[in-house]
Amino acid sequence: MELSTTNVAEAVQAATSEVFEAMAFMETMSGGDEFKPNEEQPVFYTRLPIYKPSPAMVGLVIPQTLALALSEAMMMREFDLEEDEFEIMDVLSELSNTLAGSLLTHLMPDGDSFELGLPECRVIGNPVTDKEWENSEEFLFHVENTGFYVTWEAS
Amino acid sequence: MKILIADDSGTARMFIKQCLEISIPEDVEFLEATNGQEALKLLKVGGVDLLVTDLNMPVLDGRELIRRISASPKLNGMPMMVITSSGNEARKQELLDLGANVVLRKPVNPMKIAEGLESVMNTQGGW
Image (tube, rainbow over all chains, first blue to last red; front, top):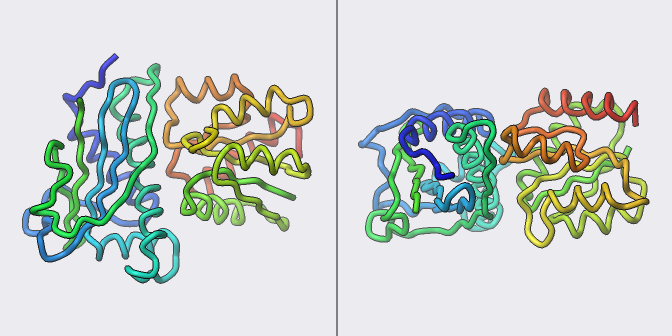
């Protein structure tokens, strides 16, 4: 069975809202063009493959300042971008994993199962020129004044 | 009480540990494993009262871990709580059939964990 993609936007919004609130106590709003990730700040790009019911990829594009805030909120301690880069990536990987699961739960009927791969996270220096997710659909959200993308690519 | 948490994410292990600490009034000793194979090694040493495991792990995943525990004469009957992002009804029933006592979908919080612990106790008749 293939994923129904007709309501991906709704599912992404629901999943993003649920997961950010539950894990980091952050309220997300959709849109906010003025807050889009730009070339002034590197981003953490986390991607997670979906193997079943059909191949797809979920991604999270988070500017460094927001990644720091998320890590501190979720782990309840201070983080340093350089010294704690590995731990920040682990936080974002877990966030992506939970978001992907929530997204697919919203997309799939109850009777069908899905299978997720393992997340990978890396730093992208310029999210405007180095868009590794260029084949993906971007869903823009913002937390206060910082925008981020959830990306979706179905094969 | 000794609880083994199996999850490849350090973030998840910390999160779950915090929720368990809030939910359990007595002193708890926590063991941690980053995959199913490490978890099995720790379980075989003995003394673990509860396994809390993710599904999506490298080396040996949670589903296979549960299956091996249920099939082991020594480990069969181990109370098992699954906390996973892949928590729809089909997967949940599959895991319960394999031997898990309760399946919780991420994201979790102390209240969900407490309810899960109660379910484990009810199915096990206590620790």
